[in-house]
Length: 142
Image (cartoon, rainbow, N blue to C red; front, side, top):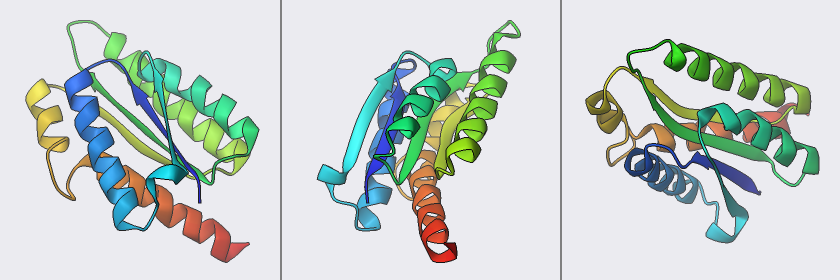
């Protein structure tokens, strides 16, 4: 099984915690580090295009999208979050590619930190496990 990890370079500390959580989830499910390929993009808005490019290669059984978007004083948050989620869903459906949505969309940094903490409650961990469950479902239902 080959898994793509797509992570943003924005909100670095939070995203690194999500990546660590995702890697832990993949490890717990038996995915070895050599089967995990990590890619970085500038921000959450860019994740869908990167995922589209990776999906076209047909090299990956699934992907995990990781990022953190914290609400600010402008509607920018709404556009970035909505378009990221929409874009990821479109790519997943178009390519029948399991995609774990580990992009935090929160009002405060404290909320993000609570979701990026250690353990199985880490949203990166949860997104990785969701991806693997869908890879298994896809294989079993084929």
